[in-house]
Image 1 (cartoon, rainbow, N blue to C red):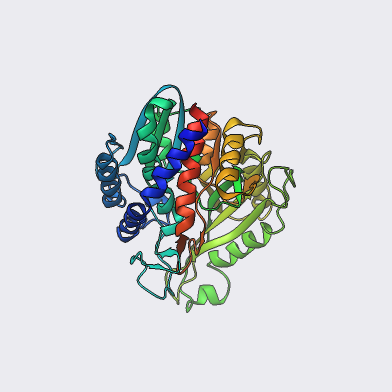
Image 2 (cartoon, rainbow, N blue to C red):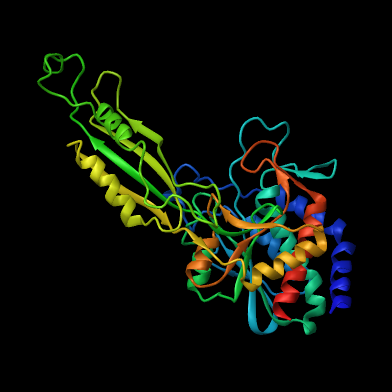
Amino acid sequence: MDEIKSRIIEEIKKSKTEQIEFLQKLVQTRSVNPNMDDPMKSSPYDSVELEVAELISNELKKIGLFPRFESISPLRPNIVCEFGKGKKTLIFNGHMDTVPPVQGYDFSPFLGFIENGKLYGTGALDMKSALCCYVYMARALSKFEREINGKVCLQFVIDEEPMAASHFGTYYLLEKGYTGNAAVIGEPGTRKITIGNRGGYRFKIEVFGDAVHTGSREWEQKKEGLNAILEMSKVINALQDFKFPIKEHPVFPKRKNVLTFPTLIKGGKAINVVSDSCVAFGDIRILPGVTKEYVEKEIKKRLDRLRIKYRLTPIVHVPAVFVKPSEPIVKILKNSIKRVLKKVPITEGSGPWSDMWMFIEKGIPAVNFGCDGQGMHGKNEYVEIQSVIDVTEIYALTAFDFLK
């Protein structure tokens, strides 16, 4: 077995130049998700990731695999590519969309240029590097397909960035029956194997007032008008210092429940009109044991005391999830990391969530592990080139051992 593993690693090393050239093409091909400010605007008919999907599909075909598009609309396809035979299936999942590049880049964010062992550009780290690793891991492993007693399922998905809760990407594939015995999601970083994520609850609160002209006698004498923006200030004050029933969890050391409100606020129609409505959005990060029902009940209890006109609208709820460190995928991945990187990663949960929760909710153990770099969701994003090769090797060894 060790001899075959060494040959797999050698195959990956031989194709390093081609792999990095392909990663450059991925970064240069735009797939910016335009719905970061309002995830509810996402549509399966916007061709956000189409060019990247076609690029990946063509590369997989070049190496002799058979990718297929699976989606609501051909304009915004997910890619599924399976190889191998057997009862067990290991999924490698990653998103093709990126956040919009922030202001302050020192260069065009879509150049994909290389300098001092780093490849720069929007999405280079999060997470086109992992997508590239999947392709070249598959290229190496497929040459030893007879030695693999199971299937590898590559999933390149859409619409993850706005809130990792889209029904068009990973969720759609799971509902279509693309399941397995475990999943690896290539979110960045080799420092740890992420074995869970805090959950979240995002919501909108609308507060209603009474519009009146600010120059009118009725407003001047306080006979008419109610300023919804001032009413919203009461809501803001009421939701500070929110109490949670669960304060800590061993999988999430030193992480807390956090309510942030408001994160976005809008109100008023004109300078000379008392606002009759104000809307604000909030974001809550929750540890295991804190439920959606508890959060909603506590918000309503605080707002009902204010005796204001309001409406609470849930936007998304993601449960806090985790898997045990003793899960086979965790132990096998850890051994692969030790072999390639000569270090032992920590195992713990993450603060932000990813599509990981969808797998765990379906009973499929899932972990996050990806490449090293800096600038994720910031300026001058880059991935370390050596990390791309290392992680490709780690993925290949993990798949081989998991399915042997």
